Length: 256
Ligand SMILES: [Zn+2]
View 1 (tube, protein in one colour):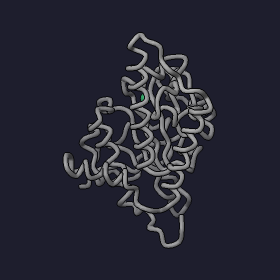
View 2 (tube, protein in one colour):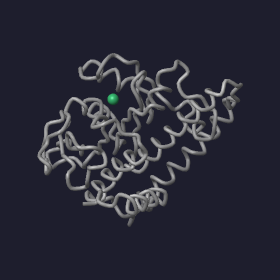
View 3 (cartoon, protein in one colour):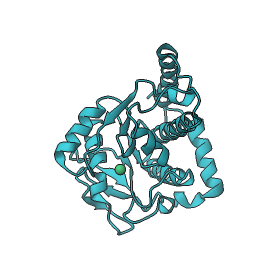
View 4 (cartoon, protein in one colour):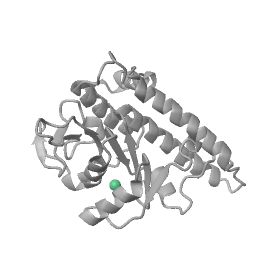
């Protein structure tokens, strides 16, 4: 980050994470009270790891900046203003990813119909359009083993993810890492559009035009440079600001 650039304050991080829950709900991408979006807090004075997570039992459209729960890497509650605890079992994948990937501020997991459908086919996401070309050769896969609760599977998830920022959890859903909450949401929305477009294109029963590898790779590099420039600039993200204004218009109490 360049000198003089404003650092994201903790209050901004809480607001952004609450906004992420609301936006995912607004897009119809939530799954009852399940799946999570987590954010990494700065380490405590003793190096303690701290993360923000949604209160257990709340819908995504009920999450606010002030009711987010602080947990440690095991999912144990450190601070819980709402008082309902967290779904510690649901945090296990997030914890494993956060502990392995310190570059990720936000880990966003969904079970959308489109994301689950594309995760359930052997070919995964095809470079059929501009949205999906940005993810060309950048998606990791993890085979389904049942609900991910045990330590050994967490190690396999981390190994399968490697240094990639997107993963299709086979027969299960999507997992996206962002250097900011904004980046995680933007990638997730583009991944969702990609999955929906693939289902629509392949559902016509006609012949799909799959982009050649070199065009898809060129497109992915263009997107990557744009994402890098945004994250490294330290400047406010205009697309994220636009998304927050959408919430301010339709669902403003996320900030409370
Ligand atoms: Zn899941």
